[in-house]
Image (cartoon, rainbow, N blue to C red):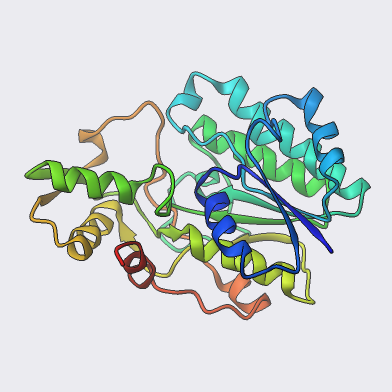
Length: 281
């Protein structure tokens, strides 16, 4: 029986993989939290993976505090770059399949057309820099790995934009949401299914892939859809990013072109509204 190790098991994607795992009893699943697999302790990390002895690794663990990363650069790079490098080296040496999760924040947001896997990377914050460094190390150390760039991840688990909006729209009469950052959300449950599609496919084609739900929207439009499905009475107001300054810059445009993953793995990608609706059922 093949063993799948999921790092970052308590995060959104890890939690959705845990739900999905019951549909794949042919695998021995190991869901490792940050104590069982310590991405910030490189001395321990290799021996921990060795002890688990997986055939497949889903590296869902990451440093994702985008604003905090501006002051915790070293820690962000340790988890998002150095730990990834170590995992990639280990998987290459031990013939283990690796799916590593990356982000749209590797782009600077200056594009006006959907970004494919060949688009120029140029991160504008520390989080994006650390994730790009992880991608580069992953490809270099294990060219057989699969990297999936995703964006605006949400789920019924963990902290995310959808849950924040649900709470605020019930607490307040009005919320302001930025209307000049464009992309597409990703329901973590959909991404989890895609990862299993790749593993189950007889066609393991390494490289970088983009995945998010279909649709080109701003965060403001995303909030309007949340309001619609939640039937909230709250007034949602579009505001410019400049009215809501954050420590870390965000890309203004990071819509991902998903042609490659749809073609290679014959995927039907659901529209963001179709997936968002499921969170409200």
